[in-house]
Image (cartoon, rainbow, N blue to C red; front, side, top):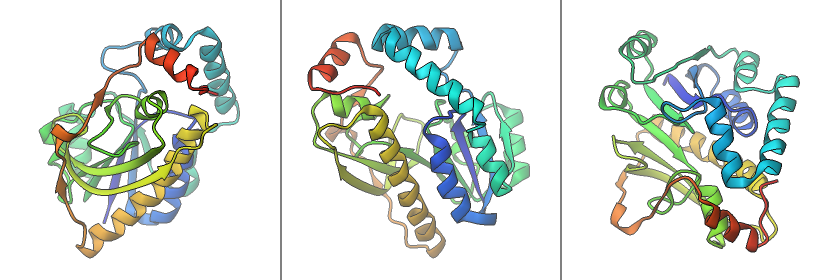
Length: 249
């Protein structure tokens, strides 16, 4: 089975995920496509300003320093892909006809979204014969949407998890095929939480690949009526997050 990944060009958390996954998949990893880590029509400056308005300039400066340090160390998904011999390319719009043609020429059996900030449309979803998966850092259908790790900490949850599901055109909806829960540590930072979540996601994804190849994967429609949806945090949510003793770093 040939697998193509669609992911955000993010240097802090995703390189570790791909180190684990690409090494384990070997020649089954057909390509990794990097999209800008931005929402639709958003610039890098606008993204930085929104982060600063939400979390403050101190956390924003810390984030900028961490990203700069990763770049100086050449820590990136692209460098991980190069080390494992997997083609790595950039894609501005995963739904663009030219990109779909490129994917068809590649011929992947399975598409996988890993923190890709673009909404997939039907032609992309239906392109690969084995389907299109998304990896989400929460126990779906709860905590659909943006930054589920932050929201779980801000809401004082004691349990978190990772879900892998076959996507449709709705946000964080479709058919669940794997899920794993883990306990939230009482003094865990958002940074540490994200690192642990990505590690667990890598292991769970590799299990799903084995199940797909064996033909034993199970698909259960997500009941969105029993779930919850969150968008970008507001200042009240960040205040609640900090009042619970949580911090970003």
